[in-house]
Image (cartoon, rainbow, N blue to C red; front, top):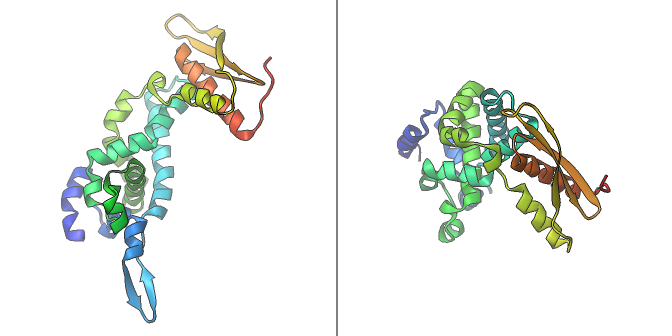
Length: 241
């Protein structure tokens, strides 16, 4: 496989010192389980990309957080959190992977091939994380940071708190699934000068309340909804104030 990866390295903008790391990053569990080499009486399973994916998930999260802080040093934590969640989401990772044509080089098993595994968003997102993990092990954090900044360049440039994860819809769907009414949002405090406002918003639902801040009312509502989801996930619903 190594001889066929030169064009992919060109697309990635990174040349591996150990191309076996890239091969592993592109190897899905289904392929590894179908291929093995003999060693005595016991077959030796081929390694797949899940461990690299595990590391890549942490690496990309740190790099994206760092870049968002550098580019938006005055944004509150809530807004940065919204943008980070969007940038490291399955949808965004899969989009970047598709732009790099990772599916073309992915090694998948027969079953995955038949069901369109090369184009599945979750599979592409996992592969993208594995490739980031491979770059990290091959070249270290500096190279990984350069790589992530390059392939996520357009996504980082377009990141805005108000266009990030739609926690409000997620919260409404969660409450509806529990036969509860949709939450209500109220602005309870506004700070800062007219050109630099910070809004504090509360979300209220049956037997529950949460708060969120943001540079716009919508962003603050999103953070309040995000906090509400955490409360519901933990099974703790404080009564409205």
